[in-house]
Image (cartoon, rainbow, N blue to C red; front, side, top):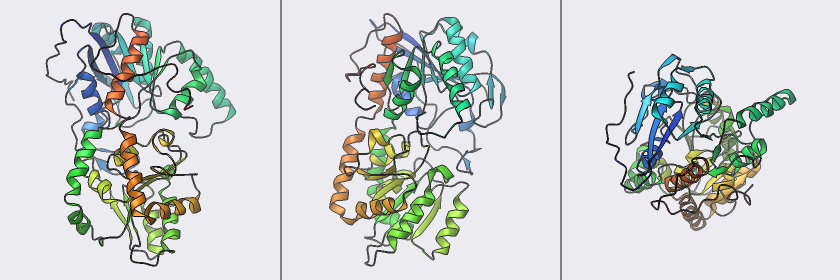
Length: 434
């Protein structure tokens, strides 16, 4: 695919120093597109996005879903972008899957004031970090890691510490997606490098608008799915992978369902696809339970109708870096149930306030949380309102504020503009949370 870029004119307002920012990222990401559009609206930041691959623009086999996916939301609107040339792009998401060239030349030609890199676990990301260092350009890094990810051997742990000691010399600031991510960076970088909050967020306005629209046709949608009115709906929407632990939810649902004898027996809707689907369907069939429905992969514009329809949303994952689906469903004003290993839990879910938090693999606790979440519709509604209130702080406006603070920390002479009025402290903002 040929390089493309947004045709909109860049014309900074008079009186502002224009900061040239390059963002190096693997491919167009559906969650990031509206955020990049928002950043590009800042009058004193000239953003250029450098994509390593165009895989998400094509129909492709999405890892985890196990089906061909083509996103139905715009991925390239409202910001300037380019696709970097490459020697290799095999359409996967592994270290050597995409091998780009010309990054050093592109950064030098762009005379960028700062380079923001998404992740450090691919060849192209490390290539970009090294190129920026050689050019003397400050580097910001953002990634998803936390301290409750997969177990590693002592040798790998030592190797990782050595790697971070080397990486540290090329990083000027970190953009943290949340409390668990901050704890991760503090483990490896301590207080030697500024850590600025740049919460994982979604387009709150998009999901709120779509959920309100879906609400107008809720009963028709329910009827189309063949669901009886006035029965609670428990929703899971994610990849059907082992680490998502949908099997735990199914077992907890079966345990809880057996105790329900009145007409309010709940449905369990499972939206998504993946390697575990056949096994899960077989388990539901063995239980002779028609109230578990497998609805397959659903695209971004369809999901809000499911969020509006449900009474509670559940994500019982392990090794979950964040769980942006939780952001989405909170914009529908719903209570949520998550495990302690869902990365957003420390930021978004307060046990007993806007949902429930359970230990991964604890079927009994999960069954209890399901019962509590739908036992009292009025209490559940109040929990949903708390979700809606809490998600307000996790927005693109906060992203812009955090990015500005990081840029101020690493780019001499860059001053904050009054267009964003959110107080951010790179050094101490996370102290109490971590």
